[in-house]
Image (cartoon, rainbow, N blue to C red; front, side, top):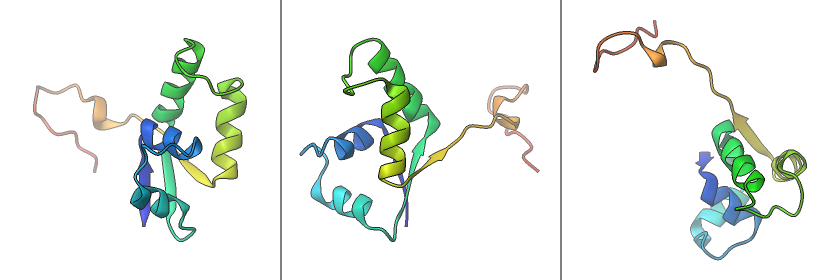
Length: 96
């Protein structure tokens, strides 16, 4: 199963925070599941840490790569193609 974690889920998992429900923790810990984190989540964590709204115990540039590798998370990148569209509102991009 592919699991895409949002920012809170990732932080709660890494901190072993009880706000992450046990069923979610079990799924994340299952080695048969692929764990994915968006680069946007990493960016959000880095910004919050930089603004001192989140304490990671060190710089985000050290914390994130270490924790993602240790916990075997894949990072989902962002690529802009037709998603930015230059058409009218509601027009679907041609992703052909």
